[in-house]
Length: 281
Ligand code: PAF
Image 1 (cartoon, rainbow, N blue to C red):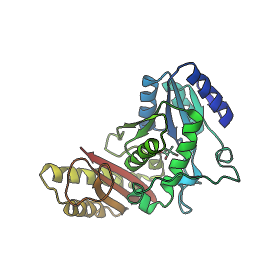
Image 2 (cartoon, rainbow, N blue to C red):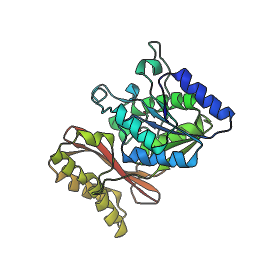
Image 3 (cartoon, protein in one colour):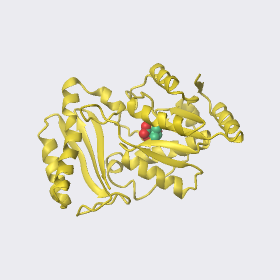
Image 4 (cartoon, protein in one colour):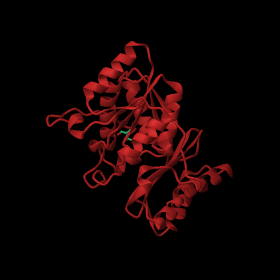
């Protein structure tokens, strides 16, 4: 039976007891509205650890003032059921006021890796992500934490933070889970109308354009980016936020395709901003 903890104290106590008993803790931090992408992370954690904790917290500090904090989809009952079915041991489900008191004043910043891609269009986003994860790691004390590769920049930034700040845990990146037609799973897919849902396929398809060009031996990053942007622009409901090809480790721009590199895109479909990527390694 999955236990639900709504206070930091309760969550810390059980995690401390498990740690003292020598039980390994796997952790899947989420903002809820769980889908098959989350389920794959949770299943991995359950199969690799004695105990698995899932946090459900729509973290206000990682949303900009114009973003979708208030309307971000929430469905605790169905999240609970999914966690229960997979065999999760504990859900940490705190109120925002518990995580961020009125006097809250401490933020965690990873430099450089956060300057471009999503960091460029979502100011302070990664500061919010790193801050909440620092808090969650201190509360849950996991041995392993599981993240999806769809948020490629987030994964890279979190790995850097864990290494730089000597957190005693290992970050595990898990493959992108896609719908049968190729759309990467995301809680934000819920916002899409049926026309937008069809239009959203242009993200994955534009990555396929890049893959085909690379397989054909093309290495000019500008040319590949232009082809991708042109492909997406043919879709009237789509507006490119960015299409970038960057070094797979430093996330800095490159001019010529070399392994490893990350082809990352963010596209507005109507008002919904979706991301996807392909890691070439
Ligand atoms: O990827 C997410 O859902 C969030 O950024 C995370 C890691 C749960 C932090 O709020």
